[in-house]
View (cartoon, helix red, strand yellow):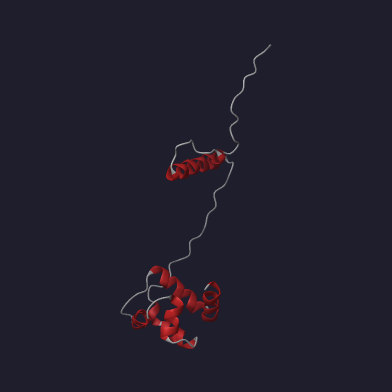
Length: 125
């Protein structure tokens, strides 16, 4: 009787290979990333390229008050939609403070479509 050799079948895609036991969360993430890199090098998968949008304008105070008034909002109402204080909105409009990156992005969305921005915030709560 002839002995049959068995070997562990290797998954076709290295990115699907589970991490060895005992790896922590970071170790598993690194293991998966290395598998994905190997798969990409073998041509088994392609990596997606995502275009990151440009940063929002650095000085929104130049038109924030005008846009807010055109949208029919008081400083207090806009502050409520952005979850900031009225003083913060006032300082942005006067140019004494600049919004943080996330706030600036929200202000950019507000400037593009004030009505849509209001609906979006009301819908998500």
